Amino acid sequence: MSTPITEVETYGVERIPDADRTATPFDLFRVAFGGANTFATCVLGAFPILFGLSFWQGLAATVLGLVVGALILAPMSLFGPLNGTNNAVSSSAHLGVHGRVVGSFLSLLTAIAFFSISVWSSGDALVGGAHRLIGLPENDLMYGLAYAVFAGLVLIVCVYGFRFMLFVNKIAVAAASLLFVLGAFAFAGDFDPSYAGSVTPELFWPSFIGAALIVLSNPVSFGAFLGDWSRYIPASTPRRKVMAAAFLSQIATIIPFTFGLATASIAAVKAPDYGANYVGGLLAVSPAWFFVPVCLIALIGGMSTGTTSLYGTGLDFSSVFPRFSRVQATLFIGILSIVFIFVGRFAANLTASISTFATLIITCTAPWMIIMTLGYVTRRGWYDPEALQVFNRRQRGGRYWFAHGWNWRGLTAWITAALVALLFVNLPGQFVGPFGELAGGVDISLPLGLALAALLYLALLTLFPEPREVFGPQGPRWVRSADTPVPPIVPVTVEV
Picture 1 (cartoon, rainbow, N blue to C red):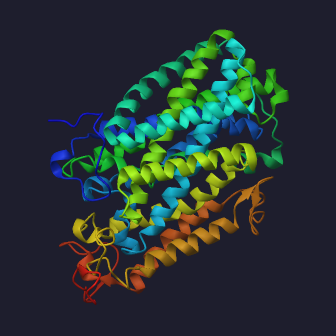
Picture 2: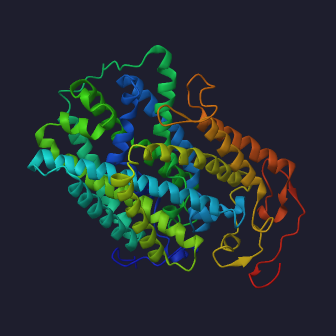
Picture 3: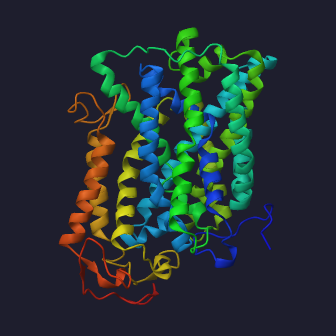
């Protein structure tokens, strides 16, 4: 019998029992697509126009970013069905049972950043649309109320857990997609695909690559969270179907990305005074009858993004601090995030810089994803689910203990790649690393981080082989193994 959606989920990051793993790859598609089929994605879709690209140049950058990002993301869907837990816990196999806190920390920062973007963008659109529709005042009180109500609704859904979140996303995927299609009719008369943009020839490639990387950051942001949802998929499910669901969920976001791209090009012509204020420009060029759909897109889509971000955060926080249940951890992180949202919006004026913050987090997360993927390949997809839970059970030893719980091979590759990538970040007017200008203004931080993580990790695995016991019965792929003894799993009170 299936679990009711109104029953509060009690599972933390322990392995989900086979009897409760009833989700399908299509469920994974709906949650991942629902979390990205939102107004926040429309805002990201506007960036190619804000960078001065033409509509067709912006569309090419968007497609490039989506395809590459989806390819990087897809393998991250495999760990959940295999191990029945989230991706941060699964990373114990490659970073060590203590080193897995890297994944937890990255997912925590990513979730807070994207939850904030979701609440801010959706709240602003909701208040702005209501102002144009019924004359609701646009002041701090109204924005504060919108943020509070919106964040509170998201928190309630996250407390109930995966089944309720899946139900919300079932509605959101269909409703938001329909509203975006409706938007095509709303703006059909004003849209001009021949919009030429304003970028100069010497700035074309920096602008094009920069726009593609911003689009790419959206699918990459899901890397730490896919296991939160795919762990409910049975282990016997064909891996190609799970990967296809994750890949297609991001390709499908061409809908909100194109909506943002097209409407930004209209606003650039008809409401140029709004500049980088995409929400204001969108409302300025929208026909009156579309204000209600704009509000619905903001509400429904924002709920999807908020729940997918905050659910994973609470789940992972409970794994780092096992004294917290999933519900307690979700409430704690949710309240902390809401405080951050209000401080950032009204006290510290961080709204504009949160996109920079998110980009820098993604720059650090992408090398971690590459290490996870290559670790999966070298292990031939074989893992010991019991040994993955050593940290959560406050034990010591096991296949993934390595050096006192740390696998310095994966950690060294990640730290080096992330630091080098940060040095080459080039976000003009926001953050430019010490070497950000070396590529002629082109931001090469992410490609450099990905390549360096892959080369360094494989080199370290080859030069310093891991214990034979971390590999399955077929042995390692591409790398060697060593006859290093593995300590038994024991309680923390017993010396290993």
